[in-house]
Amino acid sequence: MSSSCSSSAFVSTNEIRHRFSSAMSEMYRLEVPQYGTLVDLVADINAQVLQEDAALRAAMQEAGEIERLGVERHGAIRVGTAAELSTMRRLFAVMGMEPVGYYDLSVAGVPVHSTAFRPVSDEALLANPFRVFTSLLRLELIADPELRAKAQAILAKRNIFTEGALALIAQFESAGGLTSEQADEFVRQALETFRWHSEATVDAETYAALLKAHRLISDVVCFRGPHINHLTPRTLDIDAAQQAMPQRGIAAKDVVEGPPRRACPILLRQTSFKALEEKIRFADDTGAGAHTARFGEIEQRGVALTRKGRALYDTLLAKVRSMDSAGSAAPDYEARLAAAFGDFPDTHDALRREGLAFYRYSLTPQGEAKRGQLGAPAEADLDALISQGLVRADAIIYEDFLPVSAAGIFQSNLGGQEQKQYEANAAQQAFEADLGASVHDEIALYADAQQRSIEQVLAQLKG
Ligand code: OOG
Ligand code: NI
Image (cartoon, rainbow, N blue to C red; front, side, top):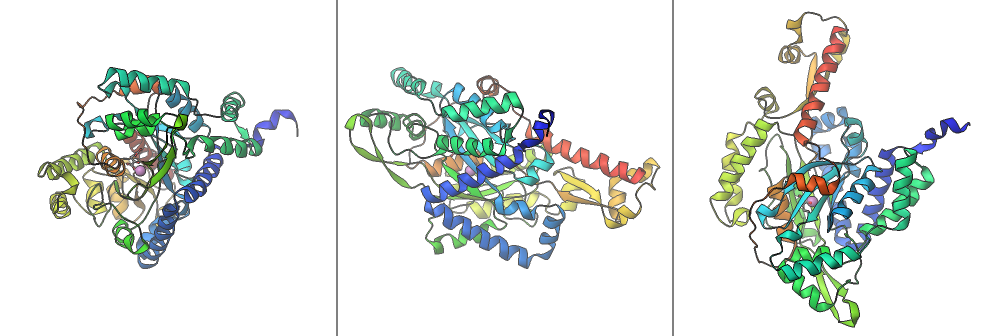
């Protein structure tokens, strides 16, 4: 083989992401054994749902989604500095993952803002939709200037990436890819950044001071790296999973975050189990303690909403949450949520016709038989083509996160009861400057996917 075809020796970014996601899952099973129990539980429930719901099975098969279900998961990390965030962006790019969306969590009393690194193309999402919710600590929200400066100094000293990982990121950027061997080495090196380290980098007193400022701040500042704090498999029936969790010895959070149970699932519903207490040792022989940060979560994903659908979702959710200051912890929350969402259409036909959700259009077998035979613009009416049985519309799955749910997940897993208040101050531009790139607008990505499918179908029919 001549050197000019060396690029063919590169493995795809999909493949690197797949290897990394599998390696993370294996590592987290060892670090947090209840995660393994949860993965097994979700696999059992998914198998049962697919067996009982032939229509869902057929739709998922048609969309090529059955294969991805077993490998699908997301994780979350929290970084401390702009430099960490921008190198993280380069690291995820090696795996075909790009920053999507901006989440301001300060509104919910968590001093971070975040994005999700994930694949963006239809084909890459089908291959493996691994996502990592990545938060950047906002030190400016620490009120005490002395403590803020101290946290800053501690963070400035650490390097969360191995030399090997940095070299392979640079190699990927200059060569345009990694060979299979390099990819394996990259995965090994990258894992070091996400591994749990039980030795804190600070003494007991500093840990206590940062913990008091906010539990999240101690989690981000006091360790060698941004340990993965949860990994989340995707279930097809989150209520069944929630119910079964205690039977397998898992203490589930009380309520499922997100929309209520519906015939046509929308967006994202999530629940988690409480964080573990892990033993830690402080620096300078200042003793031992326990840290609670790492937990397990499961989620059910539904159709992605348009801006109009999302606005309706946000309005209905806000209405329910504002009725009781306890938010989703209020005793009758679930009943009120279900009642409020009575105003949200619950058939795919209505969601689609009213422009509330996104769909991917394709030819049915009858449509295939008519390829190249339609011409007149009148025939390009999608609704008509669907009712003639020539075109089908499949829900585009929501691949992102929800800020109110994310805040609920953060809160329930930081341990401790205290609620901090911060002014709402979304700072997307500052975040993007720290990241070194702008984030994709997630709704625009779904709109593009829908539009591409429409153009393709019409082109096929017109020939
Ligand atoms: C991230 C919490 C958000 C989700 O699924 O909404 C999240 C964190 O705790 O670092 O993962
Ligand atoms: Ni999560």
